[in-house]
Image (cartoon, rainbow, N blue to C red; front, side, top):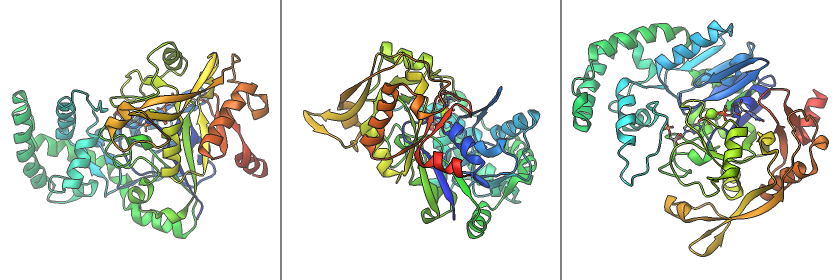
Length: 437
Ligand code: GDP
Ligand code: IMO
Ligand code: MG
């Protein structure tokens, strides 16, 4: 089966949305399989900019089926307002959209817990979550007793389940913050969610069944990763991570499609590094270079509007994500943002406690201690937003790309030089594919 997956290789916001939109026309199904409305994927189509959180970026191509699987956590209010926003702009969201009845539901108590518990991280540095209730909802999923799936919203037991959970959650919230005693009203929550359930019903179904059939009938499926590999709950910079498997290893568990059916894995890389929220970031540049990246790259969070932390490309982290995700090829995004920097640095090793290493450390304290060791490359002045062929890039830009490709031992197939679809340079195998298409 021709399955493609798109995986962010850094701390999110690598421009996965743009790449998924570009690849959509080569596929019949686009799947979101982890995370939730913590994601903000931007797709620019001509004069229109779409910011998608829960709905796959393939939705702008009407012939494609968009699927949200059971690995995703869903706030129905957010989902419905995203649907409404798209409908109002003339985008079809009808039988081209399917959501799993196995997906877990975010409730008001999850939002409250996200706010209260992130503020009280013991070591003084907050995770800095997006405050969308993602972690608390996944925590309840794993804990099982106080979790509700979308499918539960259609069961006769819904009201009593909500009452049962509210009784416990109310005690928890009151203990954390006295002003929240009596903040949850089971009746009102039941009414609200019953209405959401009715509105969502046309889209809800068994996505495992649908995708397993799609695999058997050899449909071309595109998997859209959210967040990035370094935010992976198991393999990222724990605890400064999100609560799902956002690296390449997350696709089968989140989607119910076995890894052997995915034959093309594309790693999406921003030409430099950004991070939103807390946690160590060895190549962070809290200086002129960092400011250049933030202003030229418009590095402000898609979901929360927070300024993103900016820094040089971290080759050590990238090589780790590439190997972790079984990445076949790279898409290098936002290369245009580097124009105007005299020299560019790439972190190619860390020094931790006096020892040089090429390995990404497993403990967050080691990463905090890591001193980046840089290779310095020449920059370029030219504006490259209009470049469409690799040969037309300044020599220094081509050298920068070659350096990345050689360092992680993977070919580059896409280079992005602006947010629009046409601001894309196809390289290597992708150029041949598009030439023969
Ligand atoms: P995602 O979460 O990985 O989909 O990425 P975001 O949408 O959060 O952030 C990427 C941002 O960069 C968006 O505002 C895109 O419109 C923009 N973008 C995408 N590709 C390029 C590019 O090549 N150059 C520039 N300057 N901006 C880009
Ligand atoms: P996309 O899909 C960048 C970050 C948050 C925080 C940490 C945990 O647009 O790339 P959470 O709300 O998930 O519990 O927050 O993860 N984070 C992201 N950073 N892009 C994202 O998504 C992110 N989703 C979560 O900033 O540091
Ligand atoms: Mg984003």
